[in-house]
Image 1 (cartoon, rainbow, N blue to C red):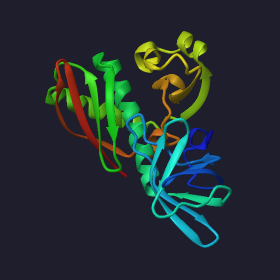
Image 2 (image 1 turned 180 degrees about the horizontal axis):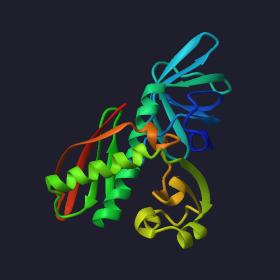
Image 3 (image 1 turned 45 degrees about the vertical axis):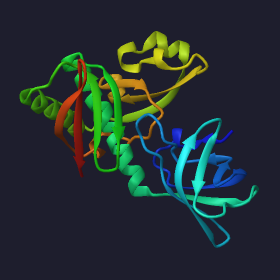
Image 4 (image 1 turned 135 degrees about the vertical axis):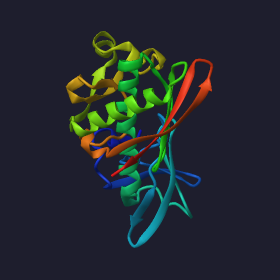
Length: 237
């Protein structure tokens, strides 16, 4: 099973690993900092290098383990490689993921609107929540509130709790632990502002403080279904 090193440190973009096995055009490493697609966050891309050869990593998916899809004939099992992520793409995804947490916190605290889904990209994102309809005044207030959290430079931390502790201590409306399979016994927690801003289960990558998110701008809203709103946003450095 691949060691998911991205869970420990979102800032690492170059690392050493060994190819454990090959499945078609997919490579399994003993450990990786490449983030596999999930939780509304796209996968990392980048390259693997070994002895002057280079393989472009075009997609990363987690199934029974983590698979790195590469262009061309993959390196053989046992090959020691250097993995290098597209650092700009990783940073963009981390900024947008932290921004999504801030937006989710504001929507829940100010509008009693829990998040039901999200999708992040390197240049934009969207979030769905339970709410009838936001008007222009609501959107302005949401934007100001999120930027206030950004400007406050709150620390963003992550750690693991056993599921029983997480269910006893965390707000179920924020964590939605009930949606996780029973087989998951440990939960990775992302904590913003020492829990004062947000404290929820998440396996994505994040920046280390909210000030790194940048200027948050709502670019539009639309109905996402009965009793659901979709908010679109972008970030500026």
